[in-house]
Length: 125
View 1 (tube, one colour):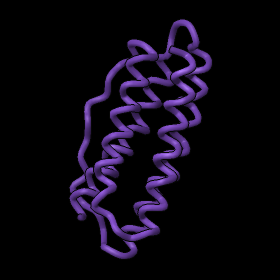
View 2 (cartoon, rainbow, N blue to C red):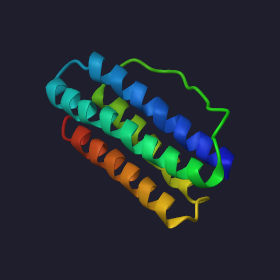
View 3 (spheres, rainbow, N blue to C red):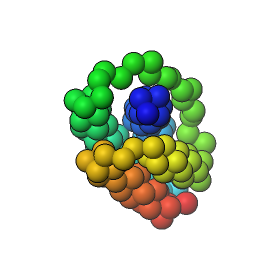
C-alpha cells in the first residue's frame, strides 16, 4: 500500500509542476481562461497533497522513494485536457487500494479538483 501512495503522491506533485508549465506557456484562443483554470489548480493541489501526505504518514509512516516524471510543453488546450483525463484515471485506479475512510475522503477532494479543472478547460477547446 505504501508503494501505491508513493506513486499517487508522485503523480500529483508532478501535476502541480506540469500545470505551472502549462499555465505559463498557454497561448491561442481561450488562453486567458486556460491560464485562469490552471492558475487555480496548482496552488490547490499542493495543499490537498500536503494534507493527504501528513494524514497517511501519521498512520503508516514516512513515505520514501518518490518518483519524478518528464514535463511536457503546451501544445494545445486539447492536449492539456487529455493530460487531466489521464490524471483522473490514474488517481481513480490508485485509490482502490486504500480503505481508510479519511484517506478516501481526501482523495475525493483531489478528484473533485481534477474534474473541476478538466471541466473548466473543456469550455476553451
